[in-house]
Length: 516
Image 1 (cartoon, rainbow, N blue to C red):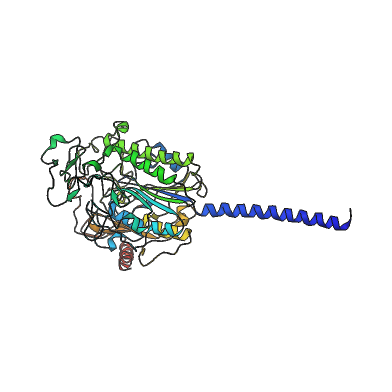
Image 2 (cartoon, rainbow, N blue to C red):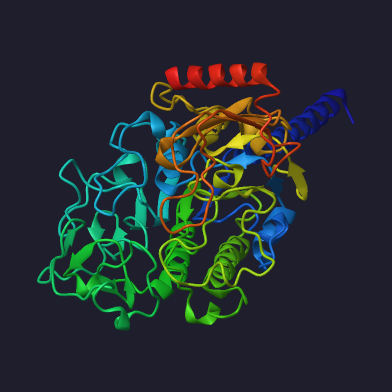
């Protein structure tokens, strides 16, 4: 063999080796790129307490949620921003505490859009990062312009105007009219010859009310929910028309799962971001027939079992479609638990040994911990180590900043003024989390809590108990309060008198945040 042939063969082998090495590098880069853009499924439950999930100590079986935690990262120090639903949802989607803006309390069923076009939002961040975005389930952030929603026309602005490509929603809550689904800009199944009329001030139409005709109810109201009857349940507010569009409460879970399945499996090269907002545990608690009576804890227990089924169905779908490995699932709740919240469903009488608030004090509406400390689980097999527990302090307001940082997206920090990049905490690489955060209780009363465990509740003149049906301590008092929730998670000992310096520090920190 001559020298030229040897050189040629050597060069050929070198090129082949280089080609193989280059191919392997490209494949690795592609895998890294894929890992950087996971699908994101945000499961946002309603009124699920810190102790409602079995993995957090609950007595009601939740095997699918428990499995989610076992295969992911469970947080024990995670917070919604408020002890009621509309403010928590607003803050999570905008990166701004809801108390900064007027009219961001619990929205009526006919509220105009609370998040307007041009506002920075989590879905808009995801859109700019190349995601297709969807919202399915409970909305409760208003629809339409300043004149309010046009139920018989185009409901605009709404989710599609703030970053979502697709939406299938309950406009407000199950206990408020109108009792219809809205898909994108229109009420689903509406007959134009039977237009919808809604009023929260006076009776409209001829549908009976719970107040006048309790004999027509399949679930009796206890307070405030005695207006128009739909599907055997009286609601807040009056509604006429729209007969062909009325929902059946029992079908919520299956309907939302079906819509989510279509969205997730849509043919697209883009990763998906789905904000899946369940309704199950919010009143009226009416599970599908196959879940009624299965828990032994009454309707509230049954809808928790239904929620767990929903989580299981979504996970099963991801597995079947080969999407599980690179889908980031975030599971949490909008606020703490409540038992009697408007209907006589025996939630308290059938509680048994189950403690929806766990080791905490208070509940929905409250300044105490059970108002805003909520279950929070992150599963992402491609990135997050399974079976771990994190004590890092995390807040839902940080989802905007965290996803923007991870995906390399700039965001409007003048709008999303309260969000931070907590990505390292979300994936288990930071065990500390936030330095502190603000909690919003009933009547927009604010508290401040630090990650060292100190919690400051400013003095206020509010009632010590929720001033209607729920038997929940508000945490309000006429003097400042200070607790150490690391040592005293039940907030049983006010240590403000013994720690005036810490009270002053925290009072100052809260004021600085309010002045931001």
